[in-house]
Length: 93
Image (cartoon, rainbow, N blue to C red; front, side):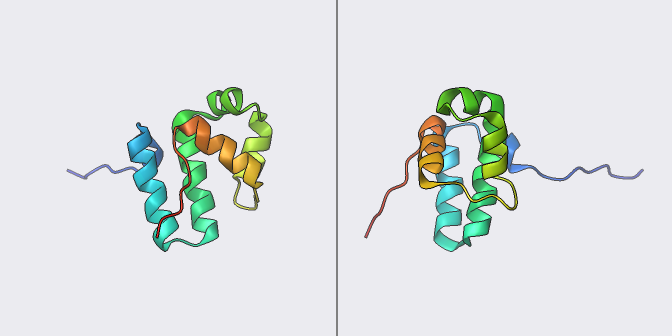
């Protein structure tokens, strides 16, 4: 009997602000800017782009563009998305 598998999608397990914060922290510590962008995109998918658009006041299409593989979100967009996700960026020494 063959084992059936499917690709793992982090968006399926990012359910709480604590989950999101831990996921982002790992990318901020070791990841490239491109990897961080993909991480934020994954988190956005976990919440649903339509809901995120409603919470941020940014159109769904603009969010998809900003967090696409070729996207380059502004700091304003990133901060509004983080706030809507219940997390914030912090600097620690």
